[in-house]
Length: 171
Image (tube, rainbow, N blue to C red; front, side, top):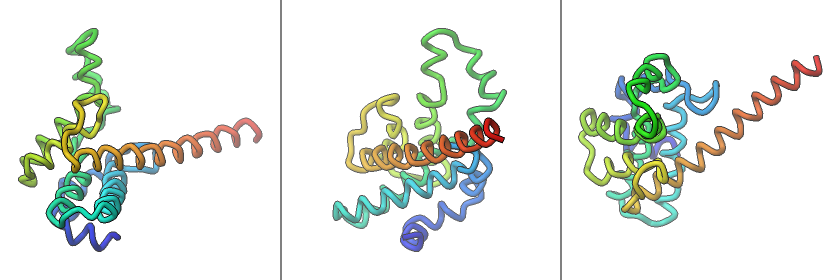
C-alpha cells in the first residue's frame, strides 16, 4: 500500500518540511509524527478504497490524512508551555494542543501544499469532539482513521512502559 500513497501524495512525502516530522515524538517514544501520519494515510486509503470513493476523493483523503498533524512543533516543549501561560482558566484549556493543532496544521498545510477547502476542513476538524464536528466524508474518514491508529500506538506505548517498569521492579 505504500506505493499507492507515494503515487497519490509523493510531493508531500518527499517535502523537506514533512520529512522534519520524523524528529517530533508523538504517541510514545518510538513513534514520530511522520510515522503516525503515514499510518493514518494508509488506513484512510484502505477505507476509501473499501468505500469505493472516487479517485479525486481518495486523493483528498490521503493528502488530508498525511497532513492532519502538520503542526510542526513539540507540544511537550518549554516553548509551548510558555505559550499556554499567556492564558488562564478556560482560555488556557482551549489553547491546549488537542484543541488547537488541527487548525494550525490546516493553515500550515494550505500554505505549504495548496490544499483544497475540503482537505483543510478535514485536517482542522480531525480532533472531534475537541474541534467542531466533521461535515464531509473526507473529514470523517480522517477522524476515524486517526483515532484508530492513535489508539493502537498508545496501546503499544503503554505496553513498552509497563514492560520497562516490570523489569525494574523484578530485577
